Image (cartoon, rainbow, N blue to C red; front, side):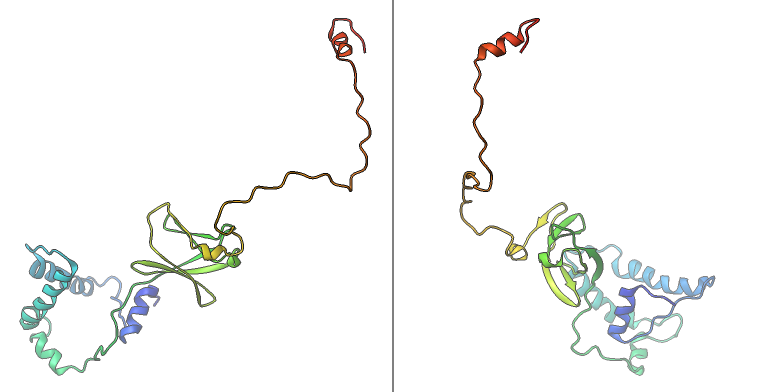
Length: 213
C-alpha cells in the first residue's frame, strides 16, 4: 500500500498505522464518511464562527459534552467510557503537526527559483543545481544537500523576492555608479598613416550624369 507522503509522515509523527478501506466494500467507506456527516449536522449546523480559534474551541467543547456522551451505534457504549478503558498513547509535549509541501527546482542562471508564480533568490553559487523547496504556512525554505540556503516569507504572484546577500560579489556596492573612462589610444596598434584629402568638387563631378572619377 502506497500512502501520500504527507499523510504517511503525519501517521509516523503520532505513532499510528493507517488502514485503507477494502475496494468494492461500500459499507466500510460509508462508516468513515458518516462521522463527517455527524459533525457537520450536529456540531456545525446553524453556527457561525468569527475565527478558527473560536471554531476549534467549540469543537473541543462539543466533543467532550456531546459526542463523547452519546451511545455509539457500533460499540453500543459511550466513547468516554471506551476511552477510559483503552490504553492510548499520550501526545506529551509534542508540538502540533505542521503541513509542509516539498518541491524540486533547478536553479536558473539568475539564481531566482520559481515558486507559485513568484521568484525567490538563492545564493548564486547554487546556479545549475537542484534544490528542495519546503513550504510552510508562511514561508518557503530552500535546501541543498540538507542545508537551508535560503528562507523567504511568501509573497504575491509575479513578485520577485531578492536577498542581496545572495549576490554578494556580483552587485556594485552602494553609492553612485562610476563614470567609465573614455577610450584611450592603444600603442599596440601600428601607425595608421596619412588620410588622403580631396577637393569636394571631385565628388560633385562624379555625382553628375555621365561623370567619371
